[in-house]
Length: 136
Image (tube, rainbow, N blue to C red):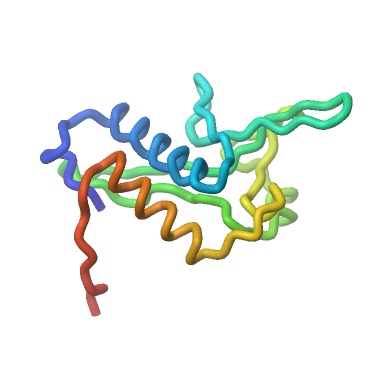
């Protein structure tokens, strides 16, 4: 949760910062995340002999109430990508677009690794944070 009253009341900038946050975390794993006009989220370009596609590695879905953010990002670390075959995730239906994860890209990343990269990148994009205990 972020209070956008303290960070400027700009939803577009907030979503762009979320994208840059994820891109920074991906860079820690030497993965080039990219933003695409008209498509929210973070994408990676994949190429092979005679083929090229863009796969979504992170989705963004936010809700604001009184300028406080709820929800946020889905960063694909190691989901079962087969689950995406029965749905049209985020409106992705064209054959040149898909869904991927860090593990699918061949990186043996754990949730702990992803958490550390996200935390470091978050502070680079949004500023210093404090850890707090979860509410009971």
